[in-house]
Image 1 (spheres, rainbow, N blue to C red):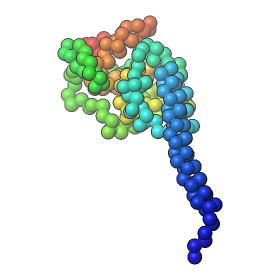
Image 2 (image 1 turned 135 degrees about the horizontal axis):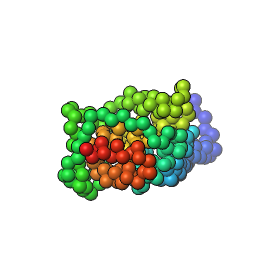
Image 3 (image 1 turned 135 degrees about the vertical axis):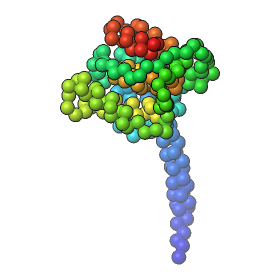
Image 4 (image 1 turned 60 degrees about the vertical axis):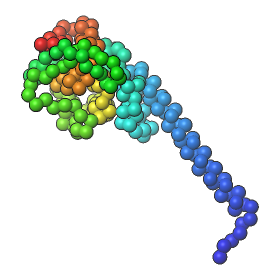
Amino acid sequence: EMVDDGPFQVLGRSRTKLTEARRVELSALMEKYLFGYAQKLLQAGRLRQLITFIRKMDLPLLPWLSNERLGCARVRDFSWALRCVVEQFRLNTPPSLDFPPKISLDLESSPSLGDGRRYPVKIVPVVSSPVPLSPAVTHKHSEEQILERIQRQHAVDGERPEHQDLRILLSALRSARCYEWLLVLGVATGDVRLIEKILRTSPGNWQAFREMLLLQDDPCYTPLLSYLEG
């Protein structure tokens, strides 16, 4: 049996619909505001604060980074970015470098990051069967190796909070193909293989990356530059 509540029933239903629509609208506005703040953190190089903020707000980091790959996730100054990573994640500087089989440079033009511009340097691997950097590949093993290397350098047992944040950031940047930040992390952690893979995938970043190495005061970066150019 239906009960007619008169105008109160109609008013109640209308109010419910309006409230739901308003809730969706406010949720979209809030998400836009939160990601706007995340964008400012990334542009300012405040990476650990970004990871903490994303975690606390329960925001989808990977889709956002993928959308910003050619936006706020670009690195404008490699030397500045390297200082940010080393300081915030408390990494040893200079890092220890393990050199795998060499690569060579071929002076051919190649596009970078799909942005339409062309650059004068192309990385050509000398080693056979190189493994390309692919967003579809799981990078857990490589990330664990990087964290193990960092722990050995710092002579600590277990994983520090800042290194846990670094693991999260590294995984997200790999999957989102944020190659410029990955190059910076490769130098900061001493992962020469990661640097090679990124330069093969995105050779247009070579000139800016090379300038960063040349600007470093510590002579430990000279062998890395010589290795990449050899």
